[in-house]
Image 1: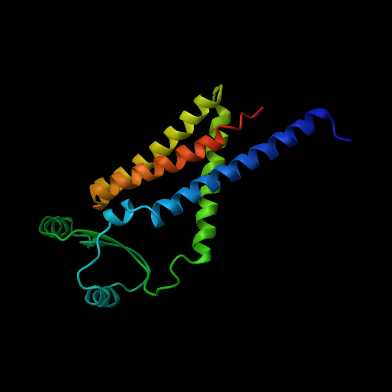
Image 2 (image 1 turned 60 degrees about the horizontal axis):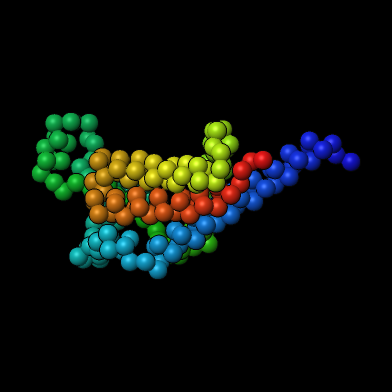
Length: 190
């Protein structure tokens, strides 16, 4: 028979794990809903005019999967600055070979990402002197806002991400972790 303290710790760990799983699920469901059922992400994305021509140029000029910039960094900063001033300016996430859209491995990675972030937030929540549901809820919601602002405003500032897409993604991340926070804040750690 286990000592009472060890049994309580095990129950607390199981309870925390359950709330981390449920919070990650809430975030994952929101992400799917916001991308598939709501119009604001697609409204912030543009399609290229001639996909075939652009795809041919990409295939001919991008040798492997990866991130590319236009202008590229040739080492000659003056030439890069001139090209940047003349435009166009782009950052391209490139995969040479297509695949299944919304493949099962994407969903698995998405859930794992949400689980890791929920676990980190739960850990941080436990480090603070957060008393009561509301303080824990606001804490997680503000972490969601900070995540959205940090990532997207940096991409807007440095990587030419449009302001429209930036605002949409900041709000989306904040809503996702506000919902996750509503679940995670139910866990008090006691």
